[in-house]
Length: 308
Image: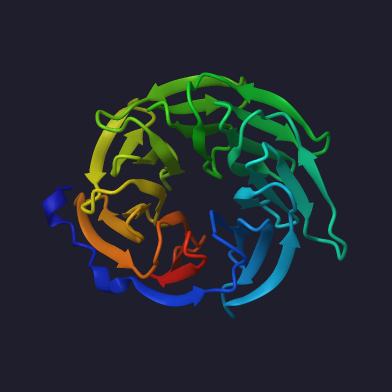
């Protein structure tokens, strides 16, 4: 199939639907529930907020004191939420009971940069201590530690259809593919231009992923080929802080330090939009499971929902 024959995706199909305000501080992280019914946001004032994207209302306020939240995640069945913080702790809070109950996962010696469930009982975390860990939530203990990065691990990404592997991106200038079953590194991938990775995301195609660099470059990799497939450069020249794909894999979204979100067409490998509206750098972008809405969070204490 010839690239030039592909229909170009146009920017007018991306419009802001709603701005979710009323956050309790900056919003470093957001996560959709698997069924798409709720959006979880982390606030730097040590709260998790749950939003109804249909009514745009906040439906739950969950205190997570004394951890200085940096990352958050819903469990697959939305019964619990994870919150990772600057105090090296990941806190698990139950959401399916009237009374709030929680427990802490202890073992990292650096901040928790991201957390991702692989099922209801297993959670992955990445940390500023250069490692990732796999946790058993029933025993509340780490069952594996993934070592090899030489600097802070900034994010991990897992594909729902292949939870036995995950990807990590680090400030050491490498992305690593890990085997959950053996706790071993299966591959190390590097870009020709990126020296520090801030974020990684899995493609809907399972065997591919994309990364966001501190120098404003986004790179895509094919795990099977063990190589880079293409790269994009932020026209604003500022760092890329977060990244995600559209549900089809056609579009790649990357939030930047200029308070906007770059949108690239992965087929024609061209820039198709620059989503503007936030007033400070973006911290996270997340696609709704049905592919109809992109959520973006920012240090301006707001979340924006963009209709596809």
